[in-house]
Image 1 (cartoon, rainbow, N blue to C red):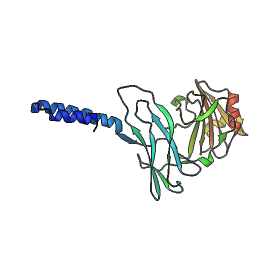
Image 2 (image 1 turned 90 degrees about the vertical axis):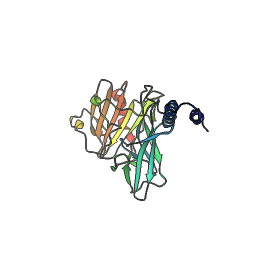
Image 3 (image 1 turned 120 degrees about the vertical axis):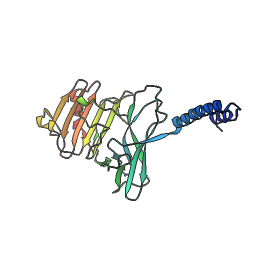
Image 4 (image 1 turned 180 degrees about the vertical axis):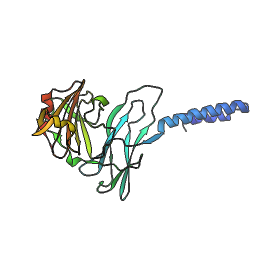
Length: 256
């Protein structure tokens, strides 16, 4: 029996007056239940970002926020049926007595059977999720020295947005991969969206693999956008942004 339960039983057995005993019992029970809720309660949250399906169809990945004051990292959970796979983010309650900055990251769930033709559904909203097939991803054959892929992510400030927001699901297949140098926070991203050429490429200032490309420089970021004939592509760097020559080198060496 837990210490908390023992303490509660001692309170109940104490021969106090009815009014005093009732007040103490109520307070103790509320305290104990609150501690149990803090330790064990889990909340379902909607899947806000895009979803990547692995090449074998069995791993689903999406984005989530996690604050260090939460007892556990968020988890992506999937419930499977014959014709649907329903996903939800499971989040622990946060200890609101402390302030803590969130850490954005990618989380995954493994299915017992490949997704196949089954419909992917967001448990929070009941909407169908259009997933991105990992077999369609292009990857960098060149990265600046010290950079490697990470499951941590970053979201640009709205006024500087160049790549899709990792917490706003698109209506077409889309996915963004993030990279960081050493143990620093992620500062490089490669986004791929199945849509027509972005308007920016009409005013192309350079080219990527023969395709017109637009270079945009913001206060703390630099991004390169182009359309490769099937996908709108973005290579984005921030804090501090990589030189233009490095962005072009990354972009020109992307392939499946």
